[in-house]
Length: 114
Length: 116
Image (cartoon, rainbow over all chains, first blue to last red; front, side, top):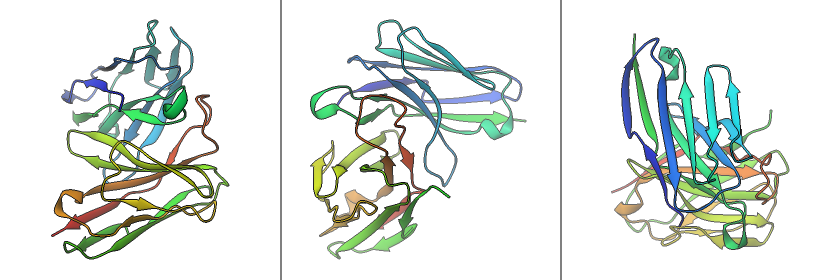
Protein backbone atom coordinates (compact mmCIF):
# COMPACT_ATOMS: atom_id res chain seq x y z
CA UNK A 1 0.00 0.00 0.00
CA UNK A 2 0.92 3.63 -0.30
CA UNK A 3 2.95 5.00 2.58
CA UNK A 4 2.10 8.19 4.43
CA UNK A 5 4.59 9.48 6.97
CA UNK A 6 2.99 11.52 9.71
CA UNK A 7 4.84 13.46 12.37
CA UNK A 8 5.17 13.98 15.18
CA UNK A 9 3.95 10.70 16.61
CA UNK A 10 2.83 12.42 19.83
CA UNK A 11 2.64 15.88 21.31
CA UNK A 12 2.22 17.11 24.87
CA UNK A 13 1.31 20.78 25.04
CA UNK A 14 -0.10 23.37 27.39
CA UNK A 15 -3.59 24.72 26.87
CA UNK A 16 -3.43 27.82 24.69
CA UNK A 17 -0.41 26.73 22.66
CA UNK A 18 -0.47 26.26 18.92
CA UNK A 19 0.08 22.83 17.37
CA UNK A 20 1.52 21.79 14.02
CA UNK A 21 1.65 18.37 12.46
CA UNK A 22 2.44 17.21 8.97
CA UNK A 23 2.18 14.35 6.58
CA UNK A 24 4.31 13.38 3.60
CA UNK A 25 3.86 10.77 0.94
CA UNK A 26 5.95 9.08 -1.70
CA UNK A 27 2.93 9.30 -4.01
CA UNK A 28 0.86 12.15 -5.34
CA UNK A 29 -2.65 12.61 -4.02
CA UNK A 30 -5.36 14.85 -5.45
CA UNK A 31 -7.20 14.95 -2.15
CA UNK A 32 -5.82 15.20 1.36
CA UNK A 33 -7.97 14.70 4.41
CA UNK A 34 -7.46 15.27 8.11
CA UNK A 35 -9.41 13.22 10.65
CA UNK A 36 -9.66 13.34 14.42
CA UNK A 37 -10.38 10.32 16.57
CA UNK A 38 -11.69 10.78 20.09
CA UNK A 39 -11.18 7.95 22.57
CA UNK A 40 -13.64 5.13 21.92
CA UNK A 41 -14.91 6.64 18.69
CA UNK A 42 -14.34 6.34 14.98
CA UNK A 43 -12.41 8.98 13.02
CA UNK A 44 -14.33 12.12 12.11
CA UNK A 45 -13.42 14.30 9.16
CA UNK A 46 -12.03 17.72 10.12
CA UNK A 47 -10.81 19.24 6.89
CA UNK A 48 -10.64 18.15 3.26
CA UNK A 49 -8.24 19.66 0.73
CA UNK A 50 -8.79 19.31 -3.00
CA UNK A 51 -6.24 21.51 -4.76
CA UNK A 52 -2.49 21.83 -4.57
CA UNK A 53 -1.56 24.91 -2.60
CA UNK A 54 -5.00 25.17 -1.03
CA UNK A 55 -5.22 26.58 2.48
CA UNK A 56 -8.44 25.79 4.33
CA UNK A 57 -9.65 26.71 7.79
CA UNK A 58 -12.25 25.20 10.08
CA UNK A 59 -12.46 27.29 13.24
CA UNK A 60 -9.12 27.05 14.99
CA UNK A 61 -7.88 24.46 12.52
CA UNK A 62 -5.98 25.32 9.37
CA UNK A 63 -4.71 22.82 6.85
CA UNK A 64 -2.67 23.20 3.70
CA UNK A 65 -2.29 21.02 0.63
CA UNK A 66 1.35 21.08 -0.43
CA UNK A 67 2.16 22.30 -3.91
CA UNK A 68 3.98 19.08 -4.75
CA UNK A 69 0.76 17.20 -3.85
CA UNK A 70 2.89 14.92 -1.70
CA UNK A 71 2.41 16.63 1.63
CA UNK A 72 -0.05 18.36 3.89
CA UNK A 73 0.02 20.29 7.15
CA UNK A 74 -2.48 20.77 9.96
CA UNK A 75 -2.25 23.58 12.47
CA UNK A 76 -4.38 24.03 15.57
CA UNK A 77 -4.31 27.43 17.19
CA UNK A 78 -4.92 28.21 20.86
CA UNK A 79 -5.41 24.57 21.87
CA UNK A 80 -8.05 23.60 24.42
CA UNK A 81 -8.49 20.39 26.43
CA UNK A 82 -11.12 18.99 24.05
CA UNK A 83 -8.51 18.98 21.26
CA UNK A 84 -7.11 15.83 22.87
CA UNK A 85 -7.23 12.85 20.54
CA UNK A 86 -5.47 11.19 17.65
CA UNK A 87 -5.17 13.14 14.42
CA UNK A 88 -4.79 11.27 11.16
CA UNK A 89 -3.88 12.48 7.73
CA UNK A 90 -5.19 10.54 4.77
CA UNK A 91 -4.71 10.64 1.05
CA UNK A 92 -7.46 9.62 -1.33
CA UNK A 93 -6.33 7.29 -4.12
CA UNK A 94 -6.83 8.72 -7.57
CA UNK A 95 -6.45 5.99 -10.15
CA UNK A 96 -6.69 2.32 -10.94
CA UNK A 97 -6.87 -0.01 -7.96
CA UNK A 98 -6.25 2.87 -5.57
CA UNK A 99 -9.25 4.88 -6.80
CA UNK A 100 -11.40 6.00 -3.89
CA UNK A 101 -9.30 4.23 -1.27
CA UNK A 102 -8.07 6.08 1.78
CA UNK A 103 -4.44 5.74 2.84
CA UNK A 104 -3.76 6.84 6.39
CA UNK A 105 -0.79 8.17 8.28
CA UNK A 106 0.03 6.54 11.59
CA UNK A 107 -1.51 9.32 13.60
CA UNK A 108 -0.43 12.07 15.98
CA UNK A 109 -1.53 11.61 19.59
CA UNK A 110 -2.23 15.05 21.04
CA UNK A 111 -2.36 15.63 24.80
CA UNK A 112 -3.32 19.06 26.13
CA UNK A 113 -2.52 19.99 29.72
CA UNK A 114 -4.83 22.52 31.37
CA UNK B 1 -29.87 10.19 11.68
CA UNK B 2 -27.25 9.26 9.09
CA UNK B 3 -24.87 6.77 10.58
CA UNK B 4 -22.72 3.68 10.30
CA UNK B 5 -23.38 1.08 12.98
CA UNK B 6 -21.24 -1.85 14.02
CA UNK B 7 -21.95 -4.82 16.26
CA UNK B 8 -20.69 -5.92 18.60
CA UNK B 9 -18.71 -3.00 20.02
CA UNK B 10 -16.58 -5.31 22.13
CA UNK B 11 -15.80 -8.98 21.67
CA UNK B 12 -13.49 -11.41 23.42
CA UNK B 13 -13.13 -14.79 21.78
CA UNK B 14 -10.76 -17.73 21.50
CA UNK B 15 -8.51 -18.85 18.70
CA UNK B 16 -10.33 -20.68 15.94
CA UNK B 17 -13.89 -19.76 16.86
CA UNK B 18 -15.58 -18.23 13.83
CA UNK B 19 -17.05 -14.77 14.32
CA UNK B 20 -18.81 -12.08 12.35
CA UNK B 21 -18.76 -8.35 12.92
CA UNK B 22 -21.72 -6.63 11.34
CA UNK B 23 -21.73 -3.22 9.68
CA UNK B 24 -24.75 -1.33 8.46
CA UNK B 25 -25.25 2.13 6.97
CA UNK B 26 -28.48 4.02 6.37
CA UNK B 27 -27.19 6.55 3.84
CA UNK B 28 -27.64 4.48 0.66
CA UNK B 29 -23.89 4.54 0.17
CA UNK B 30 -22.34 2.40 -2.54
CA UNK B 31 -18.83 2.22 -1.17
CA UNK B 32 -18.06 0.42 2.08
CA UNK B 33 -14.82 -0.73 3.65
CA UNK B 34 -13.24 -2.29 6.70
CA UNK B 35 -10.14 -1.06 8.48
CA UNK B 36 -8.14 -2.28 11.39
CA UNK B 37 -6.35 0.07 13.74
CA UNK B 38 -3.28 -0.99 15.66
CA UNK B 39 -1.10 1.17 17.93
CA UNK B 40 1.51 3.05 15.95
CA UNK B 41 0.23 1.74 12.61
CA UNK B 42 -2.76 3.95 11.95
CA UNK B 43 -5.68 2.54 9.99
CA UNK B 44 -5.11 -0.14 7.38
CA UNK B 45 -7.73 -1.24 4.93
CA UNK B 46 -8.78 -4.89 5.04
CA UNK B 47 -11.44 -5.16 2.34
CA UNK B 48 -13.66 -2.80 0.43
CA UNK B 49 -16.79 -3.02 -1.67
CA UNK B 50 -17.76 -0.74 -4.52
CA UNK B 51 -21.31 -2.00 -4.67
CA UNK B 52 -23.52 -5.01 -4.06
CA UNK B 53 -21.73 -8.27 -4.88
CA UNK B 54 -18.49 -6.39 -5.66
CA UNK B 55 -15.68 -6.74 -3.12
CA UNK B 56 -11.91 -6.47 -3.27
CA UNK B 57 -8.88 -6.85 -1.07
CA UNK B 58 -7.31 -3.94 0.73
CA UNK B 59 -3.82 -3.89 2.18
CA UNK B 60 -4.24 -6.52 4.92
CA UNK B 61 -6.89 -9.03 3.79
CA UNK B 62 -5.30 -12.24 5.11
CA UNK B 63 -7.52 -14.09 7.58
CA UNK B 64 -10.66 -12.12 6.72
CA UNK B 65 -13.68 -12.51 4.48
CA UNK B 66 -16.46 -10.12 3.58
CA UNK B 67 -19.73 -10.23 1.73
CA UNK B 68 -22.00 -7.58 0.23
CA UNK B 69 -25.37 -9.11 -0.48
CA UNK B 70 -27.27 -5.92 0.31
CA UNK B 71 -26.28 -2.33 -0.19
CA UNK B 72 -26.61 -1.36 3.46
CA UNK B 73 -24.70 -4.27 5.05
CA UNK B 74 -21.06 -5.27 4.86
CA UNK B 75 -20.17 -7.93 7.45
CA UNK B 76 -16.58 -8.85 8.29
CA UNK B 77 -16.00 -12.57 8.85
CA UNK B 78 -13.12 -14.18 10.67
CA UNK B 79 -13.35 -17.89 9.89
CA UNK B 80 -10.58 -18.92 12.28
CA UNK B 81 -9.46 -15.97 14.39
CA UNK B 82 -5.93 -15.83 15.69
CA UNK B 83 -4.35 -13.62 18.38
CA UNK B 84 -2.69 -11.39 15.75
CA UNK B 85 -6.18 -10.32 14.73
CA UNK B 86 -6.68 -8.67 18.10
CA UNK B 87 -7.34 -5.11 17.04
CA UNK B 88 -9.79 -2.24 16.78
CA UNK B 89 -11.95 -2.56 13.67
CA UNK B 90 -13.76 0.20 11.83
CA UNK B 91 -16.34 0.03 9.11
CA UNK B 92 -16.71 3.04 6.82
CA UNK B 93 -18.97 4.05 3.96
CA UNK B 94 -19.11 6.74 1.32
CA UNK B 95 -21.53 7.67 -1.41
CA UNK B 96 -19.42 6.24 -4.21
CA UNK B 97 -15.93 5.22 -5.08
CA UNK B 98 -14.35 8.27 -6.56
CA UNK B 99 -11.14 10.21 -6.28
CA UNK B 100 -13.32 13.20 -6.21
CA UNK B 101 -13.47 14.47 -2.93
CA UNK B 102 -16.74 15.48 -1.53
CA UNK B 103 -17.43 11.79 -1.15
CA UNK B 104 -16.09 11.71 2.34
CA UNK B 105 -16.02 8.44 4.22
CA UNK B 106 -18.09 8.09 7.38
CA UNK B 107 -16.76 5.79 10.06
CA UNK B 108 -18.61 3.55 12.48
CA UNK B 109 -17.85 3.63 16.22
CA UNK B 110 -15.47 0.67 16.11
CA UNK B 111 -15.35 -2.93 17.37
CA UNK B 112 -12.65 -3.88 19.80
CA UNK B 113 -11.78 -7.54 19.25
CA UNK B 114 -9.58 -9.64 21.52
CA UNK B 115 -8.58 -13.13 20.42
CA UNK B 116 -7.15 -15.27 23.19
